[in-house]
Amino acid sequence: MIKEKKSFTDVSKYIETAEEQKQPSLALMKSINNRRIGFFKLVTIYYGRYFWESLTIILALIISSVAIVSMTFIISKLVAQVMFEFGTNSENATNLVATGLRWYWWLVIAFSTLIIATIATWIREKIGGMLGRKIEMDVRNAVLSNLINMNIGYYSDKKIGEIMTKLINDTQILGDEAQLTPANLISIPIIFLGSAFSLIIVDWPTALIALFCTLIFMLLVIFTFNAQSIETEKVRKKVTEVNGDSTDRIGAIALIKASGTERYEQKRMKMINEDYYRSNRKLNSVQASTITIIIMSALSLTLIAIASAILIYKDREGGGDIIIRILPSLITGINTLAWPIYTLTGLIPGMARATASTRRVIELIKVDSTLDPNEFAPIVESIEGDIHLKDVVFEYPEKPGVTILPKTNITFKKGKSYAFVGETGSGKSTISKLLLRFYDPTSGSVLINNTDLKKMNLSSYLSHVGYVEQEPKILYGDVMYNVRYGNFQATDEEVIEACKKANLHHLVETWTNGYQTVLGERGFIMSGGQKQRLVIARIILKDPQILILDEATSALDNIVEKEIQKELEKIMVGKTTISIAHRLSTIKNADEIFVLGSGEGIVQRGTYEELISKPGHFKKLHSAGS
Image 1 (cartoon, helix red, strand yellow):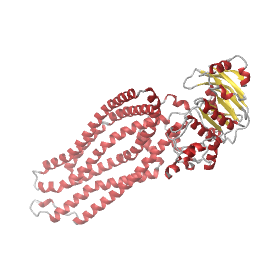
Image 2 (cartoon, rainbow, N blue to C red; image 1 turned 120 degrees about the horizontal axis):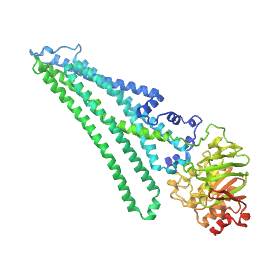
Image 3 (cartoon, one colour; image 1 turned 45 degrees about the vertical axis):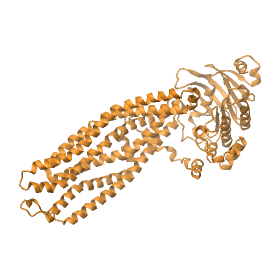
Image 4 (cartoon, helix red, strand yellow; image 1 turned 135 degrees about the vertical axis):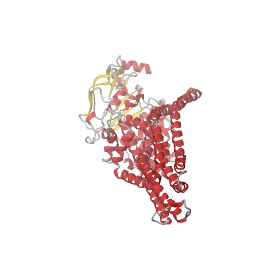
């Protein structure tokens, strides 16, 4: 319970410093010009950013790789010295010579080399693992920052599940492969060349045969990379589609339950997953061929080396002693030589996954928001004077050519209340979206403090704006966290006081964990009226200068609506209030009402009493709602 409480209430650590607000990760990713950038280019960029960690990893790689390949040479000397000191004195022992060191010194050297390799490997894996996580974290932060910065219209035709797959799965793949792939690519040539050199010292005729075969095997494996890369990208795309569809269906679980379509959805998901299964067939065939080539090649090398040694030396004088002397070192060297081939087993599929994931992540990064939040513009300390919509024309960017709001001029006087009514699609909610800067006007300007809203520091402006919508947004977390959201400096006492004013306190006190009660995703455990009271408490705590109510009570029953409306009217006092109304009874006390016609803009304006007393759109709406 204590950990859970801290995780929701201790928000001070999430407040950004000025340095953090510069979003270096996002800027770094945005600077990449090529949308089809490869994984290695991306890793190179980040290895440059974390230079000292990268240098440590590379040095540890070189040391461990050199130590590993040195074992072939050391073992060959150890075996030679052992045979010289303890071997046969027959006439066939003419090839036995001393190495210059006693056998036990070669054993000490072997164990020392093994210790060095172990320490270097641990350092490489430890620092490399953390560097991989840093890269994963940086890329994920960059993607998330860009997604948060996107104007809301970007999400109008996107599946959240697909975006989440790229945000979580693909960035994790990048982090994993950023650790493994560069390390393997550096160690493979070192171990290959070092093993080749050691084998040549041990016995160059056999070594040349083994090296020739190794090169052929490695070329066969490398040729499969392009096929794997193409097929992996197709499979990753299919995974994204499956995740997106699954998230969409889980989000609509109430609709599925209410419609009795469980069996339909089960069959539908089965068909979608069968399509995913089919998309894996070709990839699995390519991977199976690659792994088979690698394993068979690695196993064959030892047999080829032994057979070659026997064929070369079997008929020579003292050939048996030569074969016995070189075989231990030869087998050790061949096993080391085979390591790069075994490494390719994981390297090739990993590179293919990382390449596909890199391109998908860059796609999210390279999408630019049409809105600049002006993070480094002067802070808006307060909202002074009136708000003006000057010659505003609006078309949704997703539907160009369809005018929602023709040229409109409105002045909202400070501290007054205003309401917008009209038929569905007339542009009522567009007003709130422009004032919240979800969108910018197609032409014209929204003036706050006599400054175009597009040029203002958006975050600081919104700190003075309260927004209550039809479907209240409740985050996964406890009551304290949800009420405090947007005003993180508020104390627990201030949160509780806000809940009392919103008539929420007594309800919260009935819950076992009180203000530490976790509300569940989207406030699943709360009714519509309870959610609205929580949002009202949030607004009371924030104490904004501008209040935007977008059909805030239209989803509630009449009794609850009247209760919530009373609470809203209390916090409207002294604030510039803009209400988007569905039920006309909620706006009787508005200082001015604007009636919108579909595609016509403002067709009527006046007080409730003025508009109800004369023919027109408002009277028709009133009659239709009676």
